[in-house]
Length: 461
Image (cartoon, rainbow, N blue to C red):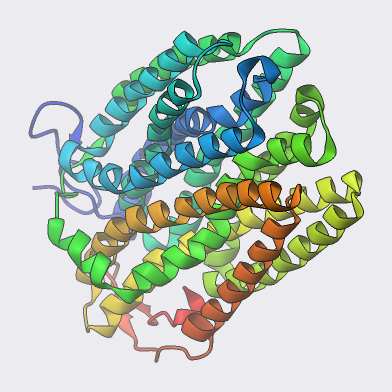
């Protein structure tokens, strides 16, 4: 029998399986849990980071693809839209794979799977390849988007509620930064006169390293069982779909703009691949770095409050983009776009922090206490994250399709930005109406550490 202040029990079956895990117990957390949780977090970030790089691979490959490839701007936007779509859809099964295979085991598998799209792209990346072939290989790269969902579900189970904003923000931010890293690598290769196969060849050994590191240093949690009921309960809960909608505004913006930024600079302002690459990485880089800060601010001030004002700021940045686009001001356009990236990253952290808080609040409202309430919150928040992450990523599909249509209809991205501005306004209204207009009553409860804690209000999630 394992006590609350002792190390996890030895594995009960093959591999690294932890039988006892109680992060809400402060004694357990300080003596055993925090060290193990942080170790799993760091290597989860590594795998998710490379997954993001492979997912967004085509955002930089299209910059290499000049006239000799025979692709129109509309073809390129369609290609990146479909890659984004696959990445969104696979997030749902990836979420539940953690409970079926174990967090460590699935991280190994999902990392190794990244070899498929990388090697396939290496094989076909040359002029003369048909658009349909590029599209098929691009769809394979979408599996990199699934790593986010399994990683977030896994890390959510390792950390106590009071640390989730920081932990989930760091996990997601470290993953998100895979976008600017591959764009920076492409910048260096383009500048050195290299080609896309050099970039792809660099990532093949990195994928192997990520899989090996997961095998050596990560753990599975025995008490994270496959629970199809949790998925059904999460899907029936209105908050899952409300948060999915809000996450479209933050993460959907981040991933959609990450795919589209370079193409917009090329098509609207006539930038060369090298000129576009010089600035394309800046927005995703800053947006990724600030995501943990968004989670920390949500821990401190409440995710709903931070998200609300973040949507206001995103709307303001978008309005500036509309003006810059109409005036054809490249400097103002680039600066505003980078600001919008930063705000999307901040909002990613604050909105995702809201999820565990919402379901913990619902547990307390049901009269649950202590570990029972914490287990209920982990169960539904973990299940909902995959759905929310998947729907949020679909926003990236919408952004790329909106840009495609805007360039086809008007020759610029201005029409798309007007649509985005309207969407951020709706996100503001929904956040205020659901999570800030009224707050839930505060009811004292007793936690597993035997300390009295107030019930969360929706304004604090």
